[in-house]
Image (cartoon, rainbow, N blue to C red; front, side):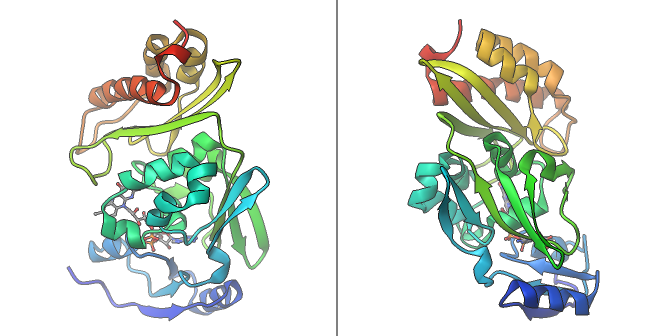
Length: 283
Ligand SMILES: Cc1cc2nc3c(=O)[nH]c(=O)nc-3n(C[C@H](O)[C@H](O)[C@H](O)COP(=O)(O)OP(=O)(O)OC[C@H]3O[C@@H](n4cnc5c(N)ncnc54)[C@H](O)[C@@H]3O)c2cc1C
């Protein structure tokens, strides 16, 4: 299907983007890689009057050390997330997530900022950012603000971003001792039926703290607090049992709610073992 008609303008700076938006009004939308937005236009899910291209704004580019963590520009593509040496060293969970996202052509254009602004509940990156305790940096004509990832994803395709804000960067803290991501999808490149991104702290060779964050099982990333505690104190079987208190997945076109809960239990074992090895887990 063809896109509905829209005006198009490219901004070369944040200031120019805000000015273009002010002129175009609330009907205008930012466009970065276009990999989600243009699909939704083709399906007539939305019909903005104008698209403002923010993909070439220098402030949205680059990966740099920030304390013990990183500042990753919002225009960083999924392909770069998977290939960048700094990200591999300082935020390996994001590097592990990249090849799970869509297909190579989409990863070459789709961006970190566009992905998290779109907030698909089955997306890998939002869950990774919550698991890592990352911060989203957003800019608007009113200035810059920082939003904890845990507060950013508020519901189905819904974030804490105001309509005129642009995600400039994501900041990750010092990398956890261990992290892993896994998902179960019908075919490689498909959105997952269920997925799990996790970060682990280890003290004296033992698991001290776990943060298990599921995707594809709710309207937004779900931090499974009970299962995370149970994994730390009692091991995988207890975590799997505790998941019934954390997750209440609705069925969708891919799987029933019961199936998703089952897949979440399978993923809990896989991810814990991948990151920690069987020896690091409590009995
Ligand atoms: C066939 C297919 C399979 C896919 N599979 C997966 C998958 O398995 N996992 C997954 O996570 N994703 C998947 N995607 C989505 C893909 O990852 C997109 O690239 C990504 O979701 C959007 O990034 P983008 O830069 O293309 O954003 P765009 O499409 O340009 O924009 C998406 C939305 O974000 C807004 N936006 C963009 N950048 C910013 C910014 N910096 N600040 C504020 N708002 C912004 C736009 O206004 C728009 O509303 C798939 C897409 C397709 C077409």
